[in-house]
Length: 67
Image (cartoon, rainbow, N blue to C red):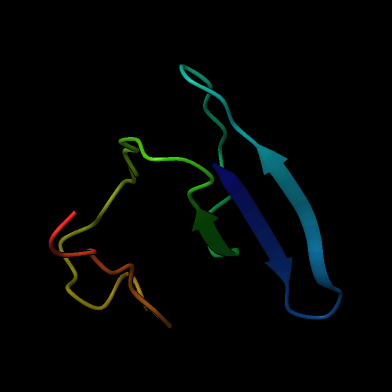
């Protein structure tokens, strides 16, 4: 999996490649994206306050049906 992080005024600032068992941390408020390089399972954990507007999603992943 590749984790990309952007900074508003600098564009793409980091790409981290994760393998099985690896993890990384993205600082709060940073725009980030995940890209699966192989089939697998990934978990995104975050601290959510009781505010339904705490995360703004620009895109969502998709599920490939029939495979």
